[in-house]
Image (spheres, rainbow, N blue to C red):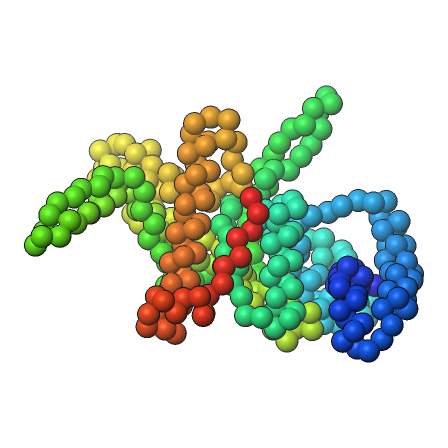
Length: 302
């Protein structure tokens, strides 16, 4: 039985059985009993088979998309040419986008809305590296980079034409102009947010929502003048500083530099997402007062 079916049954068991039964004109006690029996028959054996292990990842795209359509047909076609779907599936690297309970929760939100036919867009950062890969050496954990994008991501589409400029630092100046108090912000630096879109397919494939990931990039990633002066590192320091924003998921924040990087990551994500939301909204409505009619924002727990 596919994971999708298991999740659907689990959702039914956890649903408001009383309200559902009243709607269908059925006996809620009998309905609940049958659902519990079905749960015990179909889901509990799967839990036992996996020894209670809990895996909370974004998930692989290939397995998810095919499971939503016809996994049996794919298995049969591959078997005819002596290939195994699970062997192929193992070649895909899990997306390093919030590995853990919160990452899985965000993915479930998007998947559920797509299954229900609700149009939605999820926003996150396109981290070059996930949390880390773990190995044990002499009884201690050793962390290694999780370079999940090293082989490319076949499910994403770059959308550089939708890039967003996000500014940091600088100075705020104020003066009175024509009797009005005016404030100007002169930022110290600006970083481009380059969006990459990934499909989120609902069960049955009838609705496809979007997960938009933002990659940080420097507007000018190479200073030719510094390079000609022999300052080879200085020629690319703007590029390195900008790309650090989306270099690592959950950077160590034991130092002030780590704390600042996390804060900049949060600001960068919010700025990019709100800019994109307002761009779409302005195509639909004329007044900002109409925003609640067209936009609802779900902020994932942090």
